[in-house]
Length: 263
Ligand code: SAM
Image (cartoon, rainbow, N blue to C red; front, side):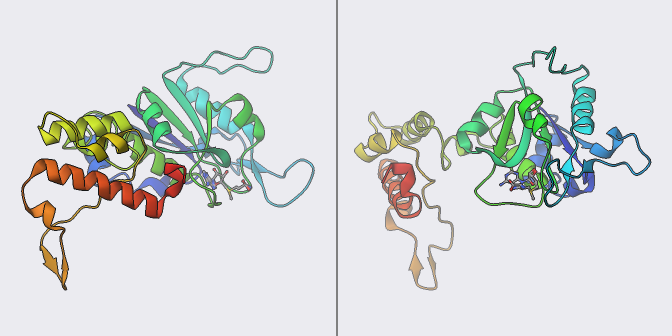
């Protein structure tokens, strides 16, 4: 899968792409990440990418022309104009990061993971000329109900969450299928396979229908400062462990994210 990051701060991405799963995915060729300096698509000697807002008001706005031209150059073809818009390739997303966009979630990550390519447009200043959202981007995405200084962190966050869903990105495929927000069917199937038992325990069946947070994880030591690992996890009974994990995931979801359960 290919990712293009269009930004006025190309150095921003030095570091975040060089560790762990992302680094391995790049090294093995599972993902190809290209960082595009937006200023290469300016024509004046100050390499101006922004301008004052029509109608007055605070701050500066990213101009449409460098963004349209950067995207067209990366795609290798034009995107048209108001008179003749060009159909976009359905396997490519052009994602505008925006606090005013649709909220990003695991379902969107899964949709993006089916694509061949994602171009990220990282906004700055007061934001981006609206014609980019309306006529260039296929998706206008927010990562949460708060305002950041730029789209670089949001783009990184989406790139990370999509990469780990690509087959082969994680050592163990079951890990992404069994995480928080995993599709209920995936969760159910993984639990069944792990159980190796003829039927799934009741709580697993009940929770499989809902979007749950991950179950709590523990590692050694079994006792730390007087806090013990739940006994059932040490006992070696896989069916009991699966049952406990489903109940614990449900309890944690109820405690931290009751909205997921409609409560
Ligand atoms: N004036 C804008 C508003 O009130 O919605 C905020 C602009 S923000 C300071 C600059 C850029 O940061 C945006 O164009 C966008 O690319 C990015 N950004 C800020 N918050 C974001 C969020 N929650 N999700 C995605 N991108 C965000």
